[in-house]
Image (cartoon, rainbow, N blue to C red; front, side, top):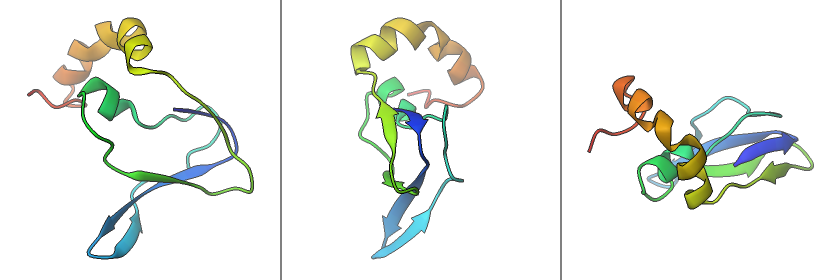
Length: 83
């Protein structure tokens, strides 16, 4: 997802307690890329932090086609699991 307008924040819930795990993400920020790169489930929840939010979406096939060549670079910098 790419934030087109508004702000969001990523959270995780552990033992019933919700904790913010990111700074506010605003216009141009993105989230959900690790699930696409690693063919995994999402690792956090994302909540609107402003009254309205507009996000652009990219499906897995398009993400892999467009950004897939960067995967090896990301693995070398430990951004992606090396599984």
